[in-house]
Image (cartoon, rainbow, N blue to C red; front, top):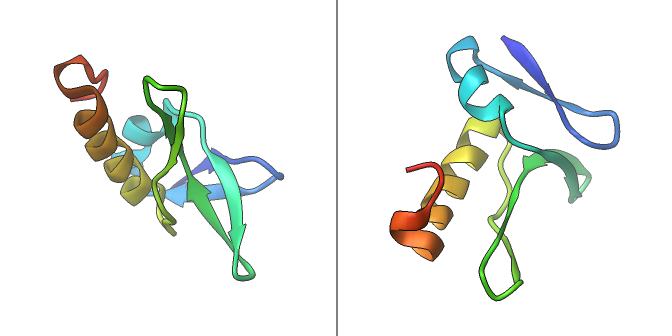
Length: 80
C-alpha cells in the first residue's frame, strides 16, 4: 500500500499495483457528509468544470475521470 497526497493534509491509500496509474494526477480531499474522499474534476472545452462524483478509493476516481475524458474529448482524450 502507498499514499497519494491530497489537499488539506490528507492522503489516499492505494494498492501498489495502482499507484503509478493514479499518482501522476492532481487529487484533492473532498469533505462530504462528515467523510473525506479522494476527488478529481475534469475541465471540458467550454470552460465548465464537471464534478465526477465521490470515491473512497483513488483507483475508482481515476476510472471515472478516464470515462469522462473519453466522453467529452473522444479521440483527443489524453488517457485512453
